[in-house]
Length: 253
Image (tube, rainbow, N blue to C red):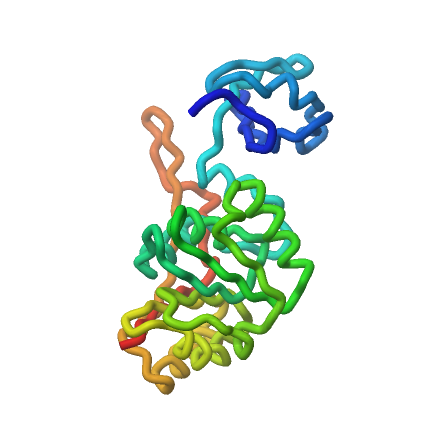
């Protein structure tokens, strides 16, 4: 890749903290009141160059997809990378595939989906709240993935117009009400996933999937546990990320 240009994003790293900014005309402020600088001080530089803001020196890095998700401008609660990675693989996503998503949230899962199907695939996201779509649209744009995404104000339970899509993924409170809509949108062999926070929702969704006719209905929970690694003192971290949500997978056959 070449030098940084206006319109793209850059990650400023000082060894302890990273800041994601988009290079636009004028001054940019770093989150947390860490200072401000002009985009023109970065445009033209290359990855690995250094820049000083105040008394701190930062290394300029071109952000990858995980950087965009970790530094997303959060609004609604988002699906974390440990779950979104499993969703992407569980849906069998590759470049060129089409996805219908129900529930925009802050756009974290949307970004992971788009990264998996680009440059030739497409993700269409339905949400009943325009403010959620606006937040997702901003974050998708910052990640540079807008060309493959369409955000629609509508109800995934009843308003889906697409057909023969490769995958449907739902992050809504009542996915059991959208299983028929998902079935109608999917091609034969297409895959389904729902993300829900409670076991009650998981039960309702699984039973609904079976009633509609889906095969291979499977529910799971992923637990992430870090480790504190010091010389002579290795142990599980005390701040383990426990329950986030349940994942439900199925397939239209």
